[in-house]
Image 1: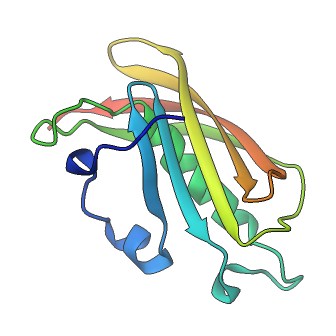
Image 2 (image 1 turned 180 degrees about the vertical axis):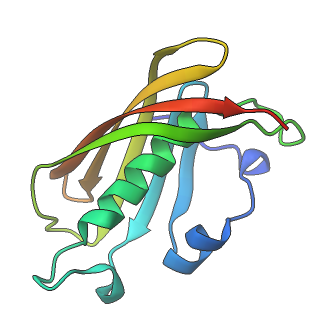
Length: 135
């Protein structure tokens, strides 16, 4: 894990602000977000809804390929394809998502992600293909 430079953190986008997840790590090829598990995130079984896992994976994998080190030079990407593997139920109170770039080129990049809780339980993994967006 890397330390987060507060000067590089972007303002929360509307979904992020609504759900309450925060960036806690961002560097070249890597990103981490954390989300406190709240009752409104749970499904009918009382565990985090699968869509929350997918949202965390999509976010960390997308951000991991967009680091520039310059807050005035924002890089954006959109998801072309994503897979999610659900592995276990959360036991802790915090969802932690991490994404890493695994390859790519000038227009697209590939990433892998994982979501675990604060007790270390690996809850989900994913892979994705992302396209850099031009302004």
